[in-house]
Amino acid sequence: MANITGTDRSDTINSQFVSTGVTGGPSTSGADLISGRGGRDRIDGSGGNDIINGDDGSDVLRGGDGNDEVNGGAGNDDLSGGRGNDRLNGGTGDDWLLGNEGNDSLSGGDGRDAVSGGDGDDRLWGNAGNDTLSGGNGNDSFSGGDGRDAISGGDGEDWLWGDAGNDTLNGGDDRDTLFGGLGDDKLNGNDDNDSINGHDGNDMLSGGDGDDRLWGNAGNDMLSGGNGNDSFSGGDGRDVISGGEGDDWLWGDAGNDILNGGDGRDTLFGGLGDDKLNGNDDNDSINGNDGNDTLSGGSGNDSLSGGDGNDKLWGDRGDDRLSGDNGNDWVSGGSGNDWLSGGDGDDRLSGEDGNDELVGGDGMICCRVETETTSCPAVTVPIYSPADGGPTP
Image (cartoon, rainbow, N blue to C red; front, side, top):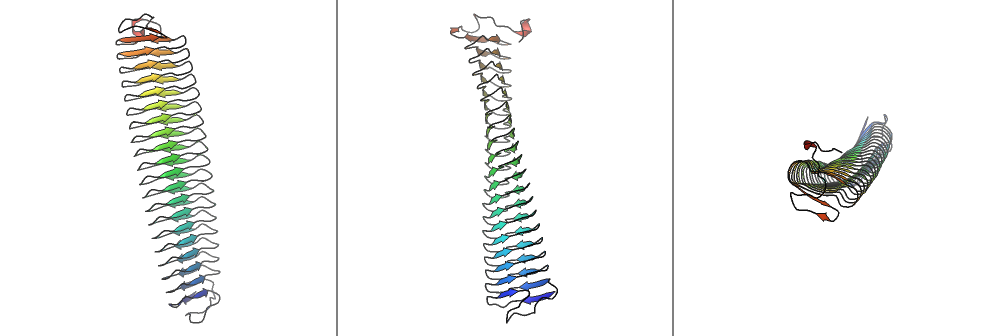
């Protein structure tokens, strides 16, 4: 191995041809240890498995062929691994790192760094500072570190972790896994079937195309599925979830959430809190669960269940089945031939347009069918309770 050391001036070093004033001689084995020392150095490792240290100054360092280790040191450095499985460390300063071919490990270090893996299955770390990380081709893994980072997976099945700071993550093509980490993050799965987890903070998650899985976790999050059959969990906080196209599964979890099913046959669960659930198009299943919830079926033949709490249910269009369940509920069928049940509690049932069937359940009942209205507890239309031997739907 040749040991080549530059001067404190701005040196140009090629491991095969050594400039005057530089200690050491040309490489005979192809595996070199090259140190630039001070100044703005240009170092090319050429062939072999080299160790290149830029040290002080803003350096241009090229690993060349072979499995190289390239260290920028202090200053704003330009590092390229070349062919082979390389390790690049930017050090302090605002650095530019490119892995090129091979399965590379790239670490930006301190400062505002731009890190690109190139071809191969690469591992990229932004570390401190506001960094830009891009994977290129291959199955890559990313960690943004501290700061406001932008991470793009590119082609391949990638793993992205924003870590601390308010980060922007884009999965790219293929099946990607995204974690926002700390901070208020923006996560976009793009193509294929992605897994997206906002983690802490008030995050914005978008599945894009494909059958995606999205978790908001802590914070007040916004989740959007896009195309495909997606599944959602809002987690803690006041979340807004939109299913988009496809047959989606939405779970608000804790907090006062807003759920919109979008196109397709969707299943909505409000979870804890006072939630607003809207099925929109097609035949949807909507369950308010706990809390004082507001449910709307939209178009299609929908099934609505209020769950616990004092709920408001509106079937809207289509032939709908509505059940207030526990609590003092308001149940309205809307247009279409609907089946309405108040459940336990003192309920208000309104059939509105169509040929509707109303089942009162326990408690006092107010009933309205089209324009005929009565005051509680008397009714002028048949109200049946299965507990009293009346008909069931």
